[in-house]
Length: 319
Image (cartoon, rainbow, N blue to C red):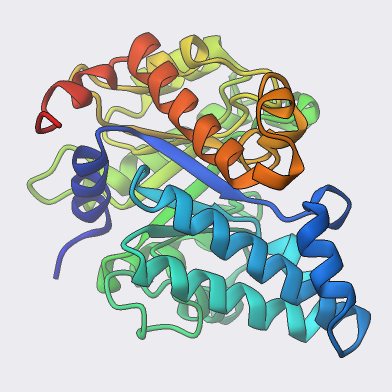
């Protein structure tokens, strides 16, 4: 069985980039063609909206599958639609897996005991997309009930070749409200980071990285630099790039010299690229998928220029 990190690194090297595309469908930002198509279909408002989200997400997948290693669907945008939204999410995840993409479910699950075991069993399919109810390669996990909440997720990930990304230093402005609180003479996020490093190191086998990753926002570059030193064997998921204000330079410290060790997420900046300059003037709503492609290429080039991930482009076969 191939581990999650083996499969992820292979995809990163094949694509020559650590760019991660988030899938965050928002009804008010969807292209008119998709919204109008949904309005003309039958069913409840939740069913019609879920159908629009599915169409939107699958069209993005068609564009980015040859370009990036993975997608990160935000579970909440689908769950808000109830059963129809969950059906759409499952279909999108399965479609992405069949398209060759790894799927990181952004569900931020976290609980204790048998409840955590149930969450892990449901979401962590790992190498075999049929191994769980949801075909995710990896899942984001909230650790703030304590270290015992992580064990069921880590055990399941190790047994199925899946990955877990633990929230360590999130990208939102209010992260410091709790994560910076001093406990035993260190910020809480550092205490979580040390636990994550220990877990990932113990399961890394012959590789540099284990299956237990960390979410660390690009919006906190100083903390990101310190956390990479504190977690040398932990794969990082970097939110906050682009729309939230984080830059490629802010993400640079997440990478090791070989260009591996992190994936950098952009959601709104790619999903709705046609609404921002210069793509709005260049493409407009009728060519929104061309804007998605252009924004993805822009991100790939930006990461290659301003992070160690640029070395990955050098090993790609000449076109």
